[in-house]
Image (cartoon, rainbow, N blue to C red):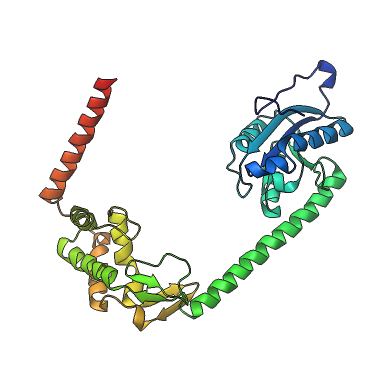
Length: 314
């Protein structure tokens, strides 16, 4: 069988087919190697045979090549969902569940959305069918299993995170600025970054402005832990993180860990009071420093002349 050149194939119904169920076929391969292991052509042929046996008509064909099913961000899959919203067909037929999506949880969520558009799901080789009443009953059983699977995963994750937090390990692979991860997953103060953290706190007490601190750091060509330029928000995240005074707060655990402390409590508390000062009535913000104001004007003019030059060259 030859795959149709366009990735969407539309058939025109004759008047006497107005009550016939309109089907859309979806096929997918995740890598070029799969072209030799139940290819898109074979998937389509199997689905087409299934549709003919059910007495339906094929109205649309969608297929994605070299796309993963871990999420729904697939070009033709999204196009198919758009057509489903428009009521262009009544059922989606696929060869196997893993060609359509990778988990029961994802399948249940997709089915719920498609049901609102009046679209059912069918697998040509598995007992997945939401067209008939018996099929919908069986699908609800599958959905219950999927929901149980999701809850068990969440429960295991919570238990795992709680166990991790009890030993004061960090919950992900990206430690805060000032630390590095050691083999057991705990934090260890990283001298160079820790000095930058202390510098940010002292700079803030002097400048009394997070935007100005970010401006100064960028002017000095100091980058964030991720190698980006500083912003007021990035500075605020440093100033507000109590890990810097040794307070470890993860998964309901709230402990003081002396070996995690980078700044003095007095420095942190003073910076916090300064940061929250505008919550008081009649608090006035200081004017923007001259050097930062000039830099913003220069940036504005540079952007304007760049745009003007681009329009002139067109």
